[in-house]
Image (cartoon, rainbow, N blue to C red; front, side, top):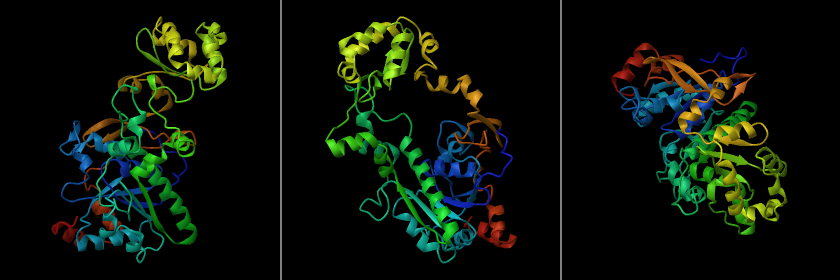
Length: 401
């Protein structure tokens, strides 16, 4: 397990309630928990976060490795937010918290009392962050939606894969992860304002807006010049060549001569300086116009040696990377060098490997602990909010927690 930094973590002392599930919001609030916030995950007493039941790998029944991915460093309470008694409990918790986060369907935060309007009377400084598929207060607010749909509608699938293949999604749910991170950025900004002014607010982000925002420069090109970027062969950059995959004797290598100087380095290191005087490849625009011809020339060179040979020749001299499978990526010795693989202790696995947070503070990775069992912290959190033993027993008897 990574050692905690000597100084307090930057969000120590902040409490965030999160009525969250599955991946998007939990990914974002996990960053807040790893940065020191007390993130209290609110789950249904009946079955908890649906992510707990996502296979194929489990620590115990309904305690999945999938759930661990998004919920390190948090605490878990069970609470029925749909009941009047549950709302009373929630409001008492909110009165002692700094923020509330959720990734409910767009029409549900108001119904579940998760908005600033619903909570400002008990805590004027509270920040309420909402993550939904399509946003709140619009014609789609009641629509369910998931990452893959956003990749489709925002144009990601049309930009991914080979030109003659079917539309292709990312191999991971990147829209979920980007949107969760954006939610946390907005929440933190609102917390800074609330600290200064004593007034909280609502913060909204939605999957589709986040996905569209990530279309960045192709969007600018289309909106201003009518230029529609399409898929390119070999996962090539749309306007820079060579910046793409090349075949080696035993696999693939990704080479990125993004700058003119790297084109010179590439030719020198692979022994093909004569290509610099070939009129087809003389200038960056020429290389892009003659991408197929250049690919054939460089394939002929790279295919003579294995990937490791070319990495030895090019790494550290220009941008280049091997094309790993997931196993190769995670078994890389560089991850051990940089501390990107951590171990935490779970009730059912003493040494569970997890990915470390990519943020370091004072040269050290953020500390991790295993995600909580369902409702493991209910009694403690309620006691901290002033509930006595009899009150907690009654709530448990009535199925509220």
